[in-house]
Image (cartoon, helix red, strand yellow):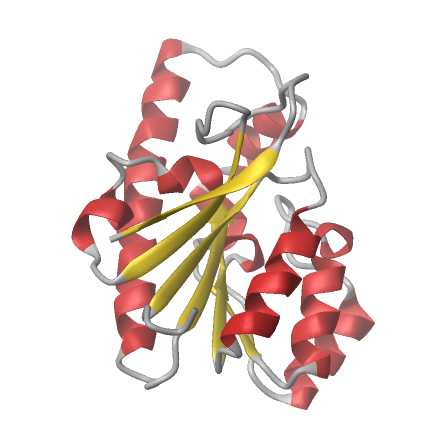
Length: 190
């Protein structure tokens, strides 16, 4: 499994139990670093960092500790550095955070703002991945929303030597939203 430098693991933001697959991949790869979108701009590299997180139990307005607790505890137990690879609150203003969390309908202008922020986030993801590739000789596990793993995404086109493990439907299509059908995991390499 370790002939690749990057292992991307698609995250569904909770419509399936993402942690089981994350744990399986991390155990197999044995990385020094796990880069994680939902940790946003926080980094857990020391026991003190982890203990502060366990005491505080808060990531941000957009990412809950509870949704990430299994991953955080697992990386702590395995002495793996868990690195946030996104912008605080995913780069959204407080007004946008509230609209997104409450799933309110967005205006055309707000949708354009989301597109701009998604582009900025993708560029930031790429910068963080490149930075950490220089910091280790070990493979890196990268956990981020499945949407970022589309064939035409910035990451998939700007990086080499990776394996993508993603939730898929019975036809092998990347899942980015809940489905009533059977969900499994598919893989692709570059």
